[in-house]
Image (cartoon, rainbow, N blue to C red; front, side, top):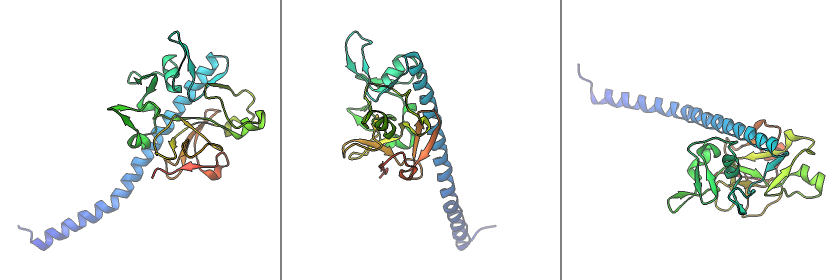
Length: 225
């Protein structure tokens, strides 16, 4: 039995319609998978940060800690110190100068935006660490956190203190190792709207959640495009 041309065209049209109906659902499922991966990574990093603070007299890492492990002072990103002190284990982590990068230190949604320099990934393209906070301002009359180390023992509501987050620079739209919630300028990093126009963040108490500007913790966020 042979199919006529019209019958073949009808079959092709039906397949195309079904594919068009299934693709949005498939894309949503993939997006949910990337959100789940990001959430898992943020939880792992939150535990690692807490373990580091427990081991070093409650000092939490800033976005660019001062390091003397090689006998002289130099700046590293927070990922380098966390990895070198073995509080974050990843055999695939790579070093670019004094900066450490790992695929597990960046949201899957932001991987396509990561910046390469001379065939190497820019080491600042990782999750961001907070550079300011309103609770900090209430305690010390300054929004700005130290880029080196901070003690958060006096923070009364750690469940409202965003510590780690998906972050993008405002001007270049590249992943960045630090972000502002209230302050900052046009060249700085802010929490990115990575997941259905919301940002995935880790709070100081260890829980991870999606936030918007309306959540009340932040004044500004960055769209992916």
